[in-house]
Length: 287
Image (cartoon, rainbow, N blue to C red; front, side, top):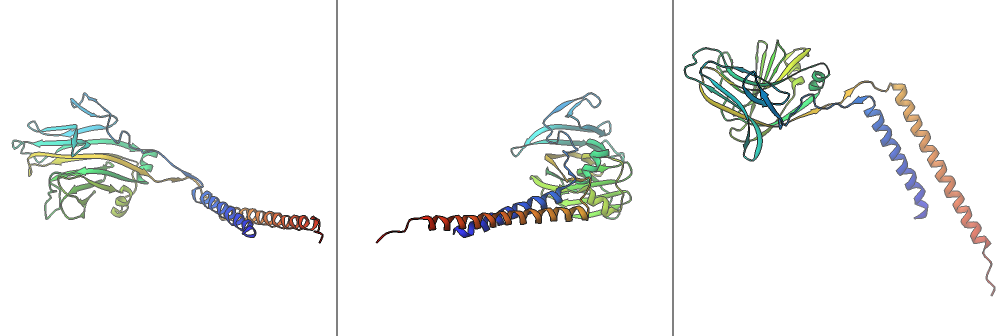
């Protein structure tokens, strides 16, 4: 058993060295950033004097409505989960083709936009109405979900009980994700993936928007709920080790392992020699 101890020490230290080196080469040059979206839990609210409502702090609210329409945004507890509620009341008296919509948005550019394109975004959604669209043109007639608006192109992530599918319109991509109505569902969205599949270049700026809206085809009272918005930002690779640098790390690892092995062998040999000397130095017993 004692003879195996040096081997165990050498193997353990060698594995530690290799693991540390692998981690160093893998994570070298990576920078981790916080979420580019702020107040994602929407616990903090502030007055909005422009729209005469209360809104989540650091978020902007955009409203499109007719004279007889009503929209509102508020905190609400749905099935024991704190949420933000978006409500649109489209009047029968509003016969225009203009949408009645409520947008809750944050604008991003620069490093924030870059981080968003490296992110996977998850959130809990609670839709209460089916998605409606023209069967021929595929133009939407109502909406509940997330809008990404860069000023030229739109991506809609729609949550409703229709089968999942994608509609590609001119400058408008609609990603319909089948989601149970009147229940909480956790959903993920990948903005960079949708831009890539649409063949669009990454923009210089964009707006991240919580969206609810309807048209004259579907008047009435419409509401949807969001909760638990989370942004998982992937690391930014600022630089990488070159091939020669990686070989140098491996060479250092090899040298360190050889040195540890040599020390362990020398220690084991000297320990054995000391044991032999002690045995030889013991007085011999007399008969």
